[in-house]
Image 1: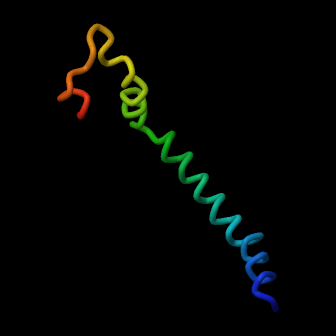
Image 2: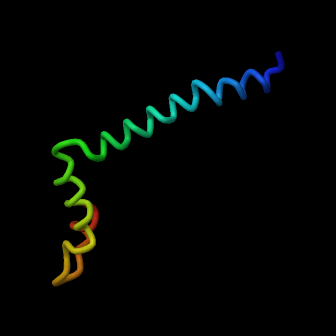
Length: 61
């Protein structure tokens, strides 16, 4: 059996299953309970300094 054929069969079966499991794991991680606050804080980053520009110290944190 050629190495290409072997790798092709592996990619069509087990790698597909592994990548699907990885995708499901990422989806579960994103929608896990308690993650809403983290994502809301991240989404609000552009609006933290609406009234004045950030100082150098604040920009680094």
